[in-house]
Image (cartoon, rainbow, N blue to C red):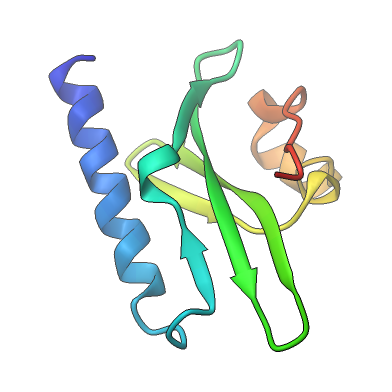
Length: 103
């Protein structure tokens, strides 16, 4: 891993923590220790973050998609349906082969 990649990962974790600091305590659990950093065939950087959402009635486990777009990370919430949406694919065409695992 090179210095630029290290910095991208640190920057991503800082943004991730800032985004969730105002949520109710315990609602979302993002597993920072098991983030899977990947690249598409065309070299676009992304990460899959194990996530747990707890409500009064149920616990949902899924992977949150994070995309690095030029200068910053963006979290994409949703499912496989989200990443196959024509609008999403028009903006992020490198992700047309992406499959989001349910867990």
